[in-house]
Image (cartoon, rainbow, N blue to C red; front, side):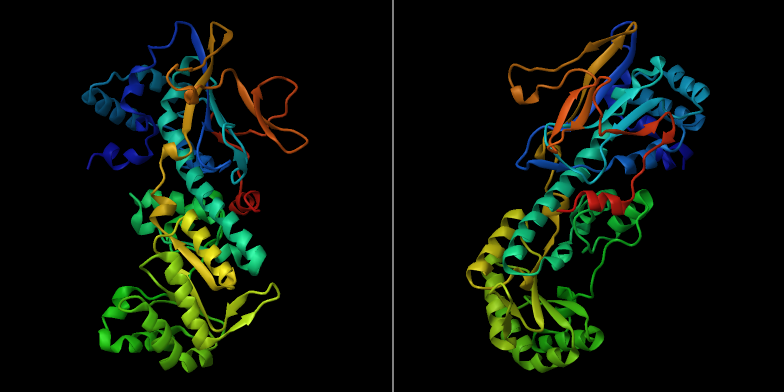
Length: 462
């Protein structure tokens, strides 16, 4: 295999959209610098839990480009029908030892920042490389919008769950209340890794190992996500319908120990019979004697209706204890709902339980596609726009303002993000008096102000 093809994923020269390669000659004569910013312009959420920049920098910008990278990129781009200005890349190779002459600034990752505020800025540091800022838009914007949208989605779910725990249960269990079930439902392993890490900013439960590895590689995390033994439909149905109870009994035999948690999907046939006759009668004493907590998982039907009915059946068999807040908590068993889960159904389920007198302690959630895949760049209106340009030594504002859509009006000038004494965030023009919270993360090959995953999590705590 061609060496360039084997390594194309790490060749930053080839990360732009096709048309980007024709842009160096499109700027005004005398252009020396292009300044751009990234923001979330819209959406249903107030804040964006910003993250993703450090992983992008460490993956793509920590490695200098090579002559082989240039050779391969030239072959591909020319064959593709676009111009390739080889002398510009050779200049970077010779003048900057292959490191991109850019300065990229960003807020501390994990920080919830109101939408319509600048999250990241980028500009070139060598006047001969003014075209680099725009070339990086494709990869840099993608590196920010996806994990930020996933983390924000997860964060909003966390706020909902915390609200119900505060009212009906124990907030100490919050970090294990939403489990990442999304690894199989995303478009790629890389999406699973990036989105999985974004979710782990808010919670500690996951079945997405790629997300853990991504956090370890790019944010210096320890193992930061955890799971428990769990059944799937094949390990139930392979026993046959007439031996369904034996499948559950085997699960208890293998994993039920004092203090342990194990999950059993129980809707392969009749979820209500499984909760009542099987778990609640035939296996009741075995569950109690094991000292474990068995988490029963319904996986079909209307979530709020099914979860409540399962909890009521389990309550009738195992009993419950009324907590200090006046809500019932099941003895020996819990329920996890992993089908049809999103922020709206989470709230609906918890409201239903509250009205019936049950604590939010009784239920956990697993979210798959709705967590990692059912988002896109428009979910939060992400964009990267040029806001200033330097021509022949003088800076000029640049702004987009389409008459047909005022929501796409962009910001103008060299921008920074500040936070006032009241804790409010504001995007303002850069001057010698403001103190920007955007820190330099990359400058001419140097990776600066790195943040650990523990720090990211702390920034997103509520």
